[in-house]
Image (cartoon, rainbow, N blue to C red):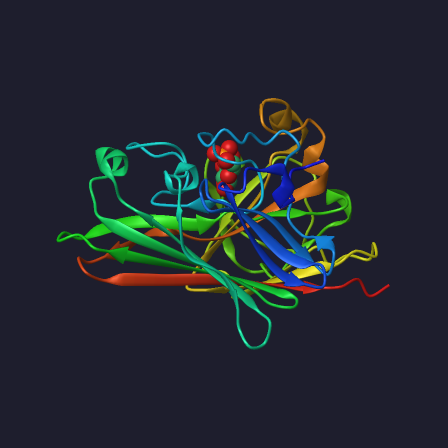
Length: 289
Ligand code: BG6
């Protein structure tokens, strides 16, 4: 079983946002990685059975936070360092008058981050669990006296019953870069994207609403809405690549798809003292059959 309940971890490592009625979110302080989002008892996120929890390696699954760089990076690790740093719980989970639960996490520069990327920053990550909606807000504060630029992304792994019965809808007519084909550019023609091979595309200037998993197999789907995340990455490593990943099961590609909201095509320029905010809202749509 993937480790998606608080009892699998030392209590000092995880934060549990419990809205009641089978709706909850579990966050690991390593990377502020969301490990689980249960909506009315249904797990929405994929977490690999082989995910490593050594507080060093990035956690394979859930929603890792990618900052200050998406993809390979000359200065440091792929996808930056935010997903492999210990975040601080700034505001512990608390319920508002509607029963929604909110918590706030922060990551600030330290000697180790400045050794890689010499800037002072403060990331604020707000996680809000509503009845059928999970809202994630990222605020990047430049607290330095010099300007910097970055890319960032929420690397959401969706749990799906079967990739062959899953569609990603909403990207028709958008341009994309195909990372599997050496960065070849093309325009998406399909209304429903079906995946049946190693798939790694950066869709650019995407609509602010995308549906994941809406197929007639009786399972739920998710509506993903994004705010100031202009790009959407769609990724599934498929069988051969899966075999080469030590923290991912050989057959797990069948049960996951990553649909990642990001600012990745153009680096965000952030002047000294300024802040930048982006967010995604995921809404659970129960099965209709
Ligand atoms: C995706 C990238 O966002 O993340 C892929 O587009 C990459 O190229 C994938 O393979 C997983 O990256 P990582 O570093 O978590 O293995």
